Image 1 (cartoon, rainbow, N blue to C red):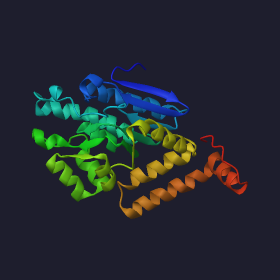
Image 2 (cartoon, rainbow, N blue to C red; image 1 turned 180 degrees about the vertical axis):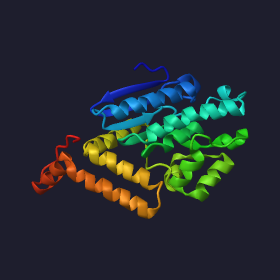
Image 3 (cartoon, rainbow, N blue to C red; image 1 turned 135 degrees about the horizontal axis):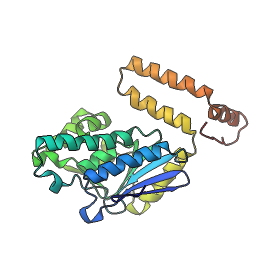
Image 4 (cartoon, rainbow, N blue to C red; image 1 turned 120 degrees about the vertical axis):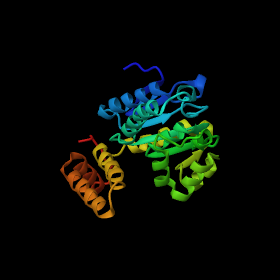
Length: 259
């Protein structure tokens, strides 16, 4: 599929989605959301893809929603539009394979919310994060009030949401918003290094491990443990489980086939 606002590249089982609106700092609009959703569906169905990276490139991740599109919107307009962003973000969040966000420069508003749908976030040392919607008389509407507290805790999330202030990469690491901070010139290499590590694992186990975490967070502990048990048991019907354990006993690297 040809895209206008994003670039999708696949190499060695790793797909990279690059936001591609540099003239407006990768501002997110309906077109971007629709294309992100379509890319998520396509990559999710592509068995050759083991890991997905989302990035905005070297200079900026995404500076937020396209305010020019929103300024004169009615409540009905926004209610309809938010369904588009929610669909895209849920498709990315629930991709049956690991998703890594590689973040350089600003990740603000919807851009920050986009990073939250990733499983792992790696930030360049020049990255800045923020949810400045409160300064516009609105609130984060693409999952920020829900995903951020679950990631960094209620108190810290409320402080960021209520103030609209930005935080730098080192603070984002301290509060648990990102997993790792690297120099800007090493961001792509470090992200790809992690993606290759994930890609070397069994694809079926990765899919069920991700589902176990994501679904478990929506349940109480008892139900989550039961869901985990079912996922664990199912893996013993796979060829990858047999190969993984055989390789361990034979003291050699496993050769997983995703079956």
